[in-house]
Image (cartoon, rainbow, N blue to C red; front, top):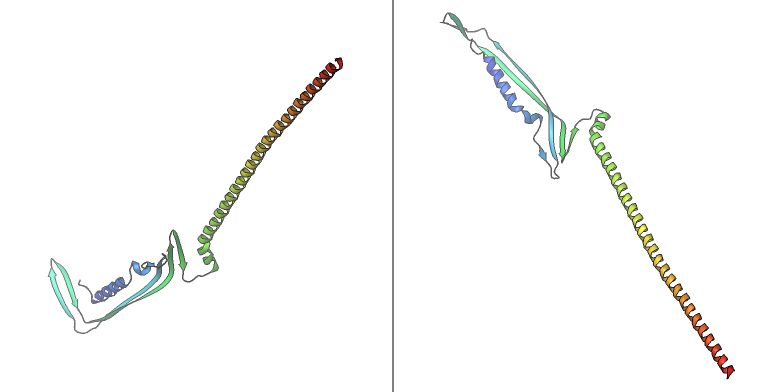
Amino acid sequence: MGEHPIENLMITAMNSIQNMVDVNTIVGEPIQSMNGITIIPISKVSFGFAAGGSEFTGETIKQYRMKDKDEEIEYKLPFGGGAGAGVSINPVAFLVVQGDNVKLMPVDHQSCIDRLIDYVPDLMQKINEMFNKTICQKDERTKRILEDIKKKNCKKSDCNKNQEKKGEEVKKQDEKIVQNEVNSQKENKMNIETIESDGEIFGEE
């Protein structure tokens, strides 16, 4: 049996729909912004298709042909028909790519929960950044405190060394003074003995 005329109408309509709807219609082509952000539109595609026709009872030509004992009949009848298709494209969301971050931003938020779910990744990232910043600040404070303690200990050790040096110098000075006093006492004693011996000699004369 040959092709019916309505098949040609359906094929034409389906080919037209295929040309209109492809992968790039659902997931659009990336859009590059000036600040390095890539935006990819995602759309919802709806389409409808209808075809119909009618054969008229007018002149009918029947051709019979016998071949290999099989009867093949070709109908050539008056025919009227039509086909139609409709396509609806609605953007539903946008994929926003910025560096390593990928964010899905719906066009229409149905509830507050959807918004919260969308902002959870950003919130977690900010919390992690805050924790890391706090840890770094604590480490810096700890290093500063340790450096201050080391400086104070160094100053104390320097002071102790200076005090020890001063103590040794004072001790040496005291020993020197004592030695000088001892020497002066010896000299005085020797002078006294000399005077006494001279007096005794003078008395004998």
